[in-house]
Structure formats: C-alpha cells, structure tokens
Image (cartoon, rainbow, N blue to C red; front, side, top):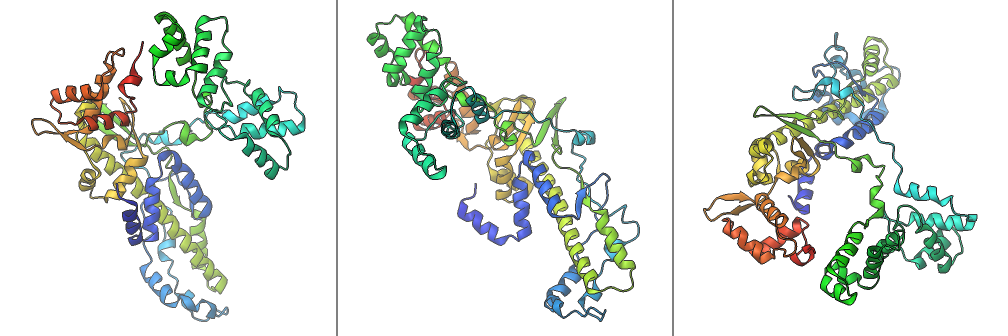
Length: 500
C-alpha cells in the first residue's frame, strides 16, 4: 500500500475529475446508491433511465477553448441581440434529430446479473437500537423530571458494548454545563444502580468484572456452581483471566468437578451485553458483496453486483429546452446564459455516467485478475492452495496503478460458494520452503491455525513447538514469525488456551 506522502503526491498530479473518480471507485456497493442519489439531487440534468443508448454527447473542445479565452467578457453582453460570445453557442450535438434514440446512457454490462435483478428492492430490517431499548425501559422507573433527565444522560453515555466508561464526576460536570442540571455523584450512582437492573443483564457496568458479576447476580444463588463462580470473579478475577486455575482451586478448596462447573457458568456470560443489538447503520449490519463467483462445472463465472448501480441517462426535459432555444429566432442574454448552464449540467451528468461505467469496468478487470491468479482457491476453497500475491502483481496484469488496485482491495467483497471474503484476504507475502518454493503466508497461517485447533487443550502447544512442527513440514520460519502470525490470527499464547 502506498504511504500517505506518496498518495498525496499522486493526488496532486490528478485533475479534480480524476480525484472524484478515484473516490467513486473506493465507494463500496452498499453505499453507491446513496452516492448516486446525491448526484441526482445536485444535477437536474441527470435522471434514472430505462433504455439502452449510445453515447452521443462529445466534448465541446472548440467551445471550451473559446469560452476560456473570452469568458471574462460576459458582463459586456448587449441584451438587444448584438453579436457576442453567446451567438456562437453550438448545441447541434445536443438537439440533433433522433437523439432520443442515441443520446442517453446505460450502465448494464454483459457481465452483470439478470437485468430483472436490478429492479428488486433490498429488504431493510426494522431494528431497535441498543440505546432505544434502554430508554424504553426507563418508563418503568418512578422518576421525576429531574431524575429522568439524569437517567437519560447516563444511558446516552453507555457505549455500544453496554459499558458506562465515563467517570461519575465528569457526568456531574456535563449535566451542569450542558443542561444546567444540578446533581451529585451520589444521585448519579443511585440511578446507575437502577439502570443496571435493565435488560440485558450486565448493562451499565464500568468494567468487565462488574459486568459479569451483575449477570451472575440474576442467576439462582442456590446453585453451587453460580455461588462459586461469583466468589472466583469477586476475589480472584486476575487469576481467572490469566487461567491460573491451580491457584484458584487451592484457595477455594475446589474439586476438579467443582472448578469446571464454576468456569462453565462464567464462560456462558456475555462480556458485551450491548453487542447483541444491531445498529441502524445498514453498512455495518451486513456485507453486500460487490462480486459473485460461481463454479459452473469447473469454469469460474464472475459477475458484478449492479443492484446499487441504477440505470442513468441525460434528462429529456433538458434536451427539450435546448431544442426550443435552437428553434427560436431571437436569443436574448438570459436565454443564452440558461443554455450555457444547461450545457454545463449535461456535461457534468455525462461525466458522472461515464465515471460510473469506468468504475464498473475497473472493478471487473481487477476482480477477474484476482480470480485468475487464485483460481485454485476459488475452485476448491482450500486456503493452502493460495499463491503469494501482492498489489503489484494485479496492477501489472490490469495495467492499473497500484493505488487503484489498493482502493478496490480495501473496500470490496466477493461472494463465493465457500463464503464471502474481502478482496484484501487474497493478498499475502511469500515464504520459502526447504525446496526453495515460494508459498503464501496465508497458507502458513492456515496450517498454523489447524495445528492449534487440533492441539490437546490440556497441554497447548507453545510457539517453540509450533515452530518446530512447521519446520518439519518444510517451512523456513522463525519462532518470532510464528508468534506474529498467531497474534494476527487473534490466537492467545499457550497458557491462555489451556482448558480443564
């Protein structure tokens, strides 16, 4: 990936339109519809289309050159029709006969899914946000207006995981300065205790320990496993998180069965009580694939998701206005200024439609190269078949700039029969084997993950043992590299993987 300074240098060399095109390329499919709607609102010459047409609006190079050299003379125009730059406005290409059949644009491509699919509406889930769920329970408390305002502030300070990480003293100041509410730390703490009784259990805790204890308090206290679990979290929380089970067992005089029953109670608790509630942000609620790859009897078929790329064309009303102007005899200054405005809007609409088409073709070209490069994976789903692949490999194949490939890889997803993957997933560095063969680090990580998954959890494999096992398989790898890959896979050290 390019460094920030390199990106800035690259952007300085691009025209404003090229920069906008780069930004448009980076927009994921799930947000593209919103971007198109923004453009439709800003440019009345752009509208949704139904029919396929060829591009007839060419660049007005002669006109642009003339208006650039004489554009400063606009204020000298004579309203009585005397000759000026406005008399040389050429709109022939905009009003030619039959342009209803050839002047619009269509975004559909032969590689796109069934055209009928583009007209289907994406169902949107009706959801209640986490904070709305908490506020709805506030009405069950008998609070006056003063207390209710404080309680709403407390709920507003709870993060998406369900924790209240703001200091009570800071909330006192916030209420005083922002809402002119005079309160005390004691009053806030009393209301916090009431909110901690809300659903879901564990909400409004200040840390993980308190969150888990709040959940255990709601379980049957006559259950020996629950009672012991509470004692473990209350008095030996650090030892539990570090899996020093022998120390806990000795301190509480627990049998192996008793310790296991207590730990089973704890691991069933939810460390993020707010995490079960979906956000209203659709982009975060689900992943909408940008590409689909199907295996048709050994032949890979790539399609581009065009669901959020509606058909666009130039407004027929704007072209009608140009025809009316062309048929008129007397053309005053106001009419000619309007014509210039219309032409600018049409040119802007044409550019946007072309930019959308270029975006689609760039995406297809990039994904097709990735698919060809990693063909074995898309046929089998086996990560160990993936080849080492860097941005430059795809840039060389597509003749695109590395920064363009990077933008595509960082924000796009592909759906396969083996799951949905971010394009970035397919890029990896190389590692050599004893035979001198270059293999993907993705392959090594997969094997490392499989080794850890198959280990005896009572005696987890250390990084040193994992290194030796990988070396025995022919991979030239150091222990520190194994540790780095393990961390990248979000796998803890051997001691924390130990189970009873």
